[in-house]
Image 1 (tube, rainbow, N blue to C red):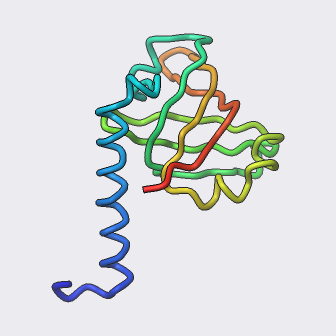
Image 2 (cartoon, helix red, strand yellow):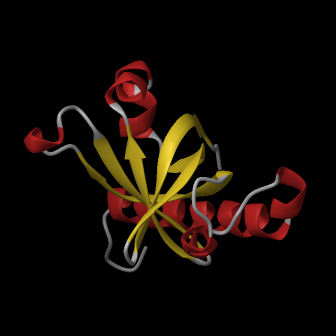
Length: 125
């Protein structure tokens, strides 16, 4: 473990396993009809599925109950918007899952693109 605590070592193993799962999803993504996150900006109001590692979760008090997640896959980062009704229904999953598979509609405002999430599921490494 080279001077690391057990928790640090296990955390590293979790990240390595997540990367392996993401590589598998990327390799076989066509069969799952997944879209790489860096392609989201090319589409507007298109229903898509993306899968990736949760990088950031934010629920600012000024967001009126919305949750914002940044998801990463091998192609880049995706900004997810989770509406309050879905957030309440899937609160535990959204707070605990490290890998997510989401379905939603692409949105674009100027140079910024995001995915308005309609359904979410956890991916298990």
